[in-house]
Length: 325
Ligand code: GDP
Image (tube, rainbow, N blue to C red; front, side):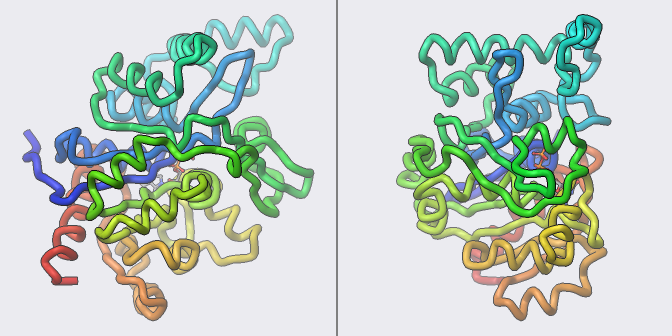
């Protein structure tokens, strides 16, 4: 049995899907649900077969429920694919992997949205039905769509990511609908009630998972207004992404795929960054940018590794409050 800890003054976590969910799972095993709020990216959301699909929200819920398919990192384990296979046989679109059990989540969400419920309450109920009581909130209730600008033109995020397997060369990103989106009121409420909260940027893709969250109007002001330390965990280890296109994107955007550049990306927002032992030689350069560096194991394969990294993050936050940074 893992020992529960508290995070005095509160904790707000920004998360995408696979990488973020791993850290949130670790945190959920050592903190009470009341002790932290997870803000989830919804820029990956899209409508497919008329269904509203929220990949990052679902990945976080399935991961916390320990029902995620471990190998893929997304979707439900012990999934079957009858719907998808039959759709392909009928000549329908088969590029987006929709499992039979997963389909129920999307149908349920779509029906409730059509009835006028907002994404926040739907997410809360969905999480609850999976036995997940951690506080997970979409960054906004409004639709936001990430568009990846590529050598082949602008691609809707899932077209770039899943259909085209991240092959096109990336030139930039756009978040459609972001300017008129309204920050989730629960985030403002949290910020008012926990003005000393710490902020963790999970090891998620900075461009397509964390940046959409940070670009929601007033979001950065709310985060900066929280007086606790702001710490990012680098998704890059030894110049490579643990999974996904983050390193490829960085290289295509003309920046080296290193934790130095991750720190640089979040400069102005973060006070510290957590990097892997493998990247220890980079720490001097990062500290030269005025960003404190913590070095630990940041690879989270097992549940134990997720809990250990979560514990380390809480130690770093505690050290900040004890003035021992
Ligand atoms: P997505 O929305 O499903 O792509 O998920 P995220 O953006 O949350 O996660 C993708 C990022 O997580 C990638 O850049 C990976 O490098 C990073 N990531 C995945 N697993 C790990 C891990 O165990 N440790 C660290 N440090 N990063 C990870």
